[in-house]
Image (cartoon, rainbow, N blue to C red; front, top):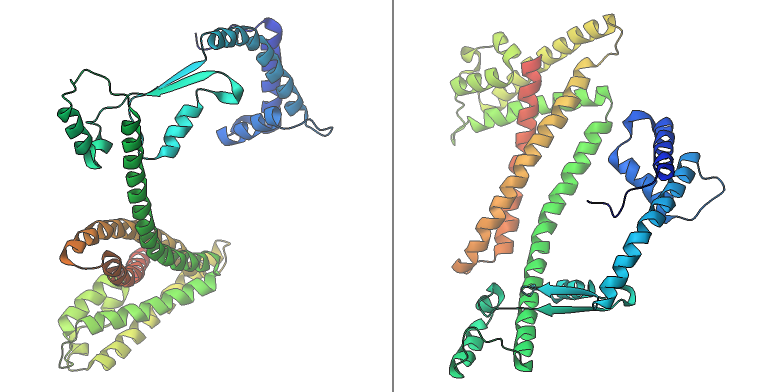
Length: 369
């Protein structure tokens, strides 16, 4: 059985009474984290006069359970100590000596007796990667059979050197990873700051933000469809504006744009979309006020949609940055600095991320209007 021994009726009654007291205090919505905190207070902290009833009952029953189990566990502890204590056997050495020391420490807790012993093979990964061939050559020179255990100070010294090399290698890797993480952390701070601003913005501010996004998106669309000579592809512009601003598409056509330069097309479309946006906002406000809600209804929708699109785009961005990190590492074989390559491309990806967030927010909002 899992428990050392069964509990008597009195202890079981105390358990049920403590459980009922906790349920009375917190109801049925008690989470595992809250329960863990309660148990910590009851078992690991000193008593206080103002302790609540459920803590007092839980502390009493914990002590009763401990006393009941100690009758069995104390005898088992004596048997283990008489047998020499806990024997920890390792089947290989970890890349970090700290982990090995922690494992050894299991065998002698708080002054108890204990023993630890490691059984290794020269074919273990750590030996093979970091110098095990030299040790194997020594064994072959002395014609040591495969089934003969090797116990010598030279082997332990060689093993410690190998482990030191591994630790130094991983220390360098962690240093490089930290530099890469600093680049991403800078981007994270920008996005989190912007997300906080959007989250705390008023409905009116959210509506103004979306109006600004409208104008920036129109400018980007027209700019993307303008060639080197300044000629605007009115058909493509009409198509793209219709995709992002479907409600505004009925108020202009390709003929109204043809023959105009980039600035004129941008100004014309911006005026049309701004007028449609304001009209739609006023229409939604009338519906919201009639139903007992506040004005700036479109601002509330804009805030929610912007936050959702931002979160989705950021999640995709993290995966793109991880893929970039893996790819730039290979460029060191071209004589390039992986960190500088990462910083340069990460900046370009981040600029595209900001545009993606804005495009997605505009597209989603106008589809919902």
